[in-house]
Image (cartoon, rainbow, N blue to C red; front, side, top):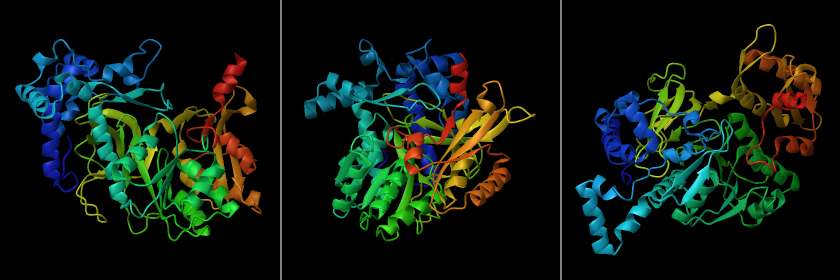
Length: 500
């Protein structure tokens, strides 16, 4: 089901194996049992014989969020991605080798053929997208897929060098039908690592999570960057003892160097000794996550996200033309599932932009010879055209606010708000900043410095700066209430609805 030597192969071997696996996967699984892709291939005049190498992938049209998200007109879109063998014709569509395998398992292990087929295809575990850029979309796993998920989860902890006889992990991801919590759960189960699942601030509460880290002498903390920063800052104010914390794993949001510096400073103020901070990358449609490895200084350096070439094929394409780019060149991330059942996507455009793309040389830190994805990722969906003056349609990349704000040591928390001048839904767009800063900060100096930086990097002007207490801005961000904090708030829809 997966390559035992997945992280120690040459590029040529990886590409050859991926091409062969892709061809058989399409022939034996996807084109037989996926309603969505069977129709797509028929419409395009393609067959599995047309796809025999990784380069042949470009013959297949892209799949986008618009294709798979449920809508009022097509609420069943997500189900069309699920492999659905017809019980009445399944036996006549499988290969002789597959029939032999099913019979062998029945004879040797007493597994009824029906149960084997249900294990392979029956959806029994569901996760969902958050609905940030489209309606929430369910993705499903079968028992077959759960084996792959558990292996991917095990690899995450393996890359960190985590040891079950030395480490204790506190999981601050929210209890939710989202990948982040469940991959940590399965990683702990597969490796036997002791851990405490808190459910995040909405369930256990920040004060109790701090107590757990302190009293259980946790060595590893995992969670969403915004909430982990909030929890750690609160712990520092309470004088908690985090001296055993050696590693923080972050997922579900972008992590900048400035953020890592601030978090490390807080941890060290509570006794932690040079803690390592690593970010992960994952999304529902892939059904796994990837991690950067332990470089010499995880704050300032990164080795890139270590990919699993036996579970997915990654492409980096020009977001405007859709054409593949070269090694190390920037572009949009496109992913193709390999070997999965349940929900399957081919050439799925993630909307994530990798600055630096993918490199193939062995990792200089851990030595693994696998493709590595740049950790400098931004979301194309965070780019908006705003009416900011006489020239309408100014393109603004709100991702740029993350490194700018995190690099300012005076800023404790922040939120960017898009609104309308004079709260008039027909007027020009304005961008305001809500900030919480350290005591004693010269507000005029800070705002002038921010204006200069934002103008230089983004060619923007902040209309108003609003300063808040920590309690006030935490409510704006939804730190304790939301699955992810609300960093960029678009108020324009609220104003339009008020007019209606």
